[in-house]
Structure formats: C-alpha cells, structure tokens
Image (cartoon, rainbow, N blue to C red; front, side):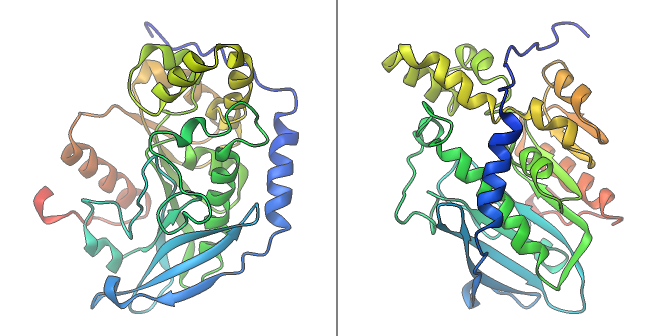
Length: 301
C-alpha cells in the first residue's frame, strides 16, 4: 500500500501502569447515579432521563439516557465524548425514532455542558489543557468519564449486553473498548491522538491546531507534550480492541492501526457527506445488531 502512514510515537515505559492507576481510581469511586425523568425529551415511544454520575476527581458528569417503551432488553448506543461543548440524547441530525429501538446514552464528560461545574472547557482549548503533564492532562479524566458511562449503562436492567456500541468521531470508543469490558462494537475515527505529533504540523484544523498553537507559545515543552499524548495514542490500545469496529479513515492512514487491532475491523473513508456517511454508519450498526433495516432520519430517506 503506497504512502502508508508511519507514526513515530514512542510508547511510554509506564503506559500500562498509568492506565492501571486511572482505572484503579475509577473503581474506587462509587458511580453514585442520580436519575431524573425528563418529560421534555420523552416521546410516545421512549422515556428520557437526566443522569448524573461520579468519575475520578471526584467529578460529577452527566448523561442523557433514553429507554424504549415496551419489553426489553434493548440494544444500546453509547455516544462518547466529542470535541464539542454540547451533547444531546442522540447526535444532531440523527433520527429521533432510533430511540424506539435502542437504549441511548449521550455522555457529557467533564467540561461539557451539564458537566461544566466547576470546570467549563473551552473549545478550542480543552485539547491542550494540562498537556504538559500526563498526570494533570484533562483527557485523563475524560477517558475515565467514558469508562464510567459504560459502567453505568451496563448496570441498567433494560440493556442487552450482547449488543452495546460505543460511538464517537474520535478515538474515545477505541480507548474505552480497550480499557473497559462491556462494549461489543465500536464506531471510531483516528483523529486526535493517533500520531498526534506527526499529524499536527500537517494541519491547521482543530483540535490538532491547538498543539501547534501551544508549541508556538511553549516550544521548550515539545518533549513533555509528545510524552503526554503518547499515553492516549490508539495504536497502543489497538491490541486490546477485540470487538467489531467501523473505523472512519483512509486506508493508508489507518493501516498501522488496523494491523495492530485484534478484532474485526472495517475501514471506511468519509465521502465528505453527512448524509452518505450517516447512512453507511446506520446500516453498519443495524447489520451488526441483526436488524434488516436501519432507522434513518426523514431527510436521508
């Protein structure tokens, strides 16, 4: 394959110990779930809830939970943390009617709306918040928040544990699948942490441009930044991802990642169309979960 991406990221010697400390702290923290029915987001086919959970810190995070009315258990879609301030019951543009088929959980990790006290993240800004030290880097907590979301969702009696998809437009589903048992499928994109120091100089787009901005301001911290982001590179989590995965990426870019992954992987390059990509993703999830049809928004049909 021509022009295969060759990341130069070095795996930290204490990579495993770093994440063992994170998960140990999380396991020592009670979930302490608080649930409040949300009539505004409920429909004739589902009931919605506002959910608050405790993650490491301790820090209270938030989630939009939706449960289909009727006899369960139901397959699950967990929408993990994104590079945006607001998370919803389902991502903007998706068919609301999918909530008649799936339990859905939209996570607001620390800093995002509804989980922005005492920490309100800046967009752009969050990607380099604390990046000079891996122990204080904000995404250490964000990854823990994603794992906590899985913990909570799997505690629900309405959940079909054989069909639980983690969905994101970054690496969070891959990191979560590697660190926490429970996800059975993943939809992810190698974008933020995959060869960060190799890819950042080639782009002006955020969030990677945050790294360029940061290093222009603090050029002497390059080595520290490289070490921090290496703890989050999906390449080092890939051998532990053993579930069917839809990976949004170009084939040459994804090649090293796919080679390292232990599960079934389908690589799909974006067609630059929310409609085309959205239909493909919905149909992929439907097939994986054993449905003959995908529930699509009216404007995609």
